[in-house]
Length: 595
View 1 (cartoon, rainbow, N blue to C red):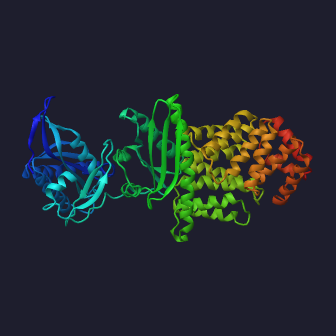
View 2 (view 1 turned 60 degrees about the vertical axis):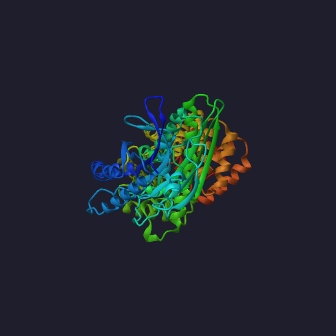
View 3 (view 1 turned 30 degrees about the vertical axis):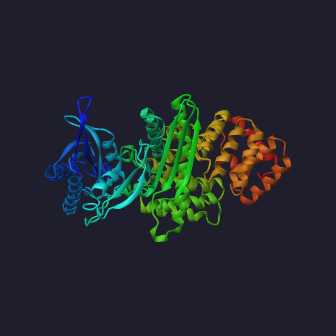
């Protein structure tokens, strides 16, 4: 079991058959984020009081530190295994810390026997890389060994080893059989989870580079960075930083393991492959609590301009993640007991009610938002959606006191921005409130520009910006903005609203055929959205389809029996462009709406 000299190296080192051991700290990034000073102090104490002395006792040498781990070499396989078992026992013994101590450190250890090249201050070779990869298959507080090690200690230190089967290691052509050593050492759990936000949390793991070499890693890393920034800017997700998720680089992980380690509800895994002819990016979204697959996306594009390609890929991935997370969160909220709802759950339930636009249940949404605000008065999201509730209450003609609702909408949206000045949702809704309810279109446009600057991937910011552009008579630009919003959220549950705004944009642009098309689609998706009826009526009149226009008018009067054209023109008519405004009112008058 002793290492045997083989030959002299050709580059200043000598080749040996040696036992290589690799230690990895579980959840190092989390530990450092939680308490950097204490974590470093405890790690250095463990290294100097346990790892180095025990290595010396077993004839081994600590070769180097790797930031969050240790590389060691032994002349005896049995000594290396006994050293690893002794280290894990010592770690458990040191786990009895005061209650206010930093989170406990737990280790993974892997051992492999192989030829290595030894220099004065380091060791090299595939054997070192195999040991580093093997530790990924160890449990926190556990030890794994390769088949080469197991064959030499199976009757002694590895008598209770469990065969984990053949495992594929990244960048190695042939799989390696791995064994887990069972012992009487108590199980060690991973570091405590990071404190959860009230928002659904997601970790974007480093994308696996499937290309021929490591030269494309920069592109994969850039995609991840853009995804994190884009999702964080939505204001609806708590996104784990890239620095933390790097601990999973190069590992094949179970989404449940990531959820446990990072304290997140959702995990995005994926890969990227670049060739001279195409770039292929595949991503999969998982529920970290169950490991269930929620959504996947595979995008293939020609390389072209790399940054433009990157932007398009990020846009498509964000468009799939955000609505699928919302849907999953709503399903979970619907299963909860009323006393267990969080501010986020109540907000989602309120949105579900709002989007139904049923006057018999609409007030329930306001109550849910009020409970969300009471539960977390510093959470911007329910304030923003409460402003939206008041806006729709006026827009639908349901308000018994429109002046009060308009004022409340402004106050609530303003409060949302005070709580989170970079929240694209809050900025978007406040901009629309200013434009639609207060007719301060220029002020609204400024806030909507801020929303897009804060999060260029906010579908709502693009759609609401389109509405204001249409009110100002900038129809062509309004169409482009609405179409971008639809690309960003093609699965949204409130598509009826986005389709209505696209209809308004085409109407402002003088394309009445498309205005009718998109307004009809909005009508089919939500027949209760009366604001859409008005733009559909005007579009049908402009297109010469008077019979259908009168049918829609009668349905509008059923939804808003107290609607009066004169009052609406003075208070709720949204267009500022004088030509659009005059023609819009005249077209509604032609179908016989009461004055």
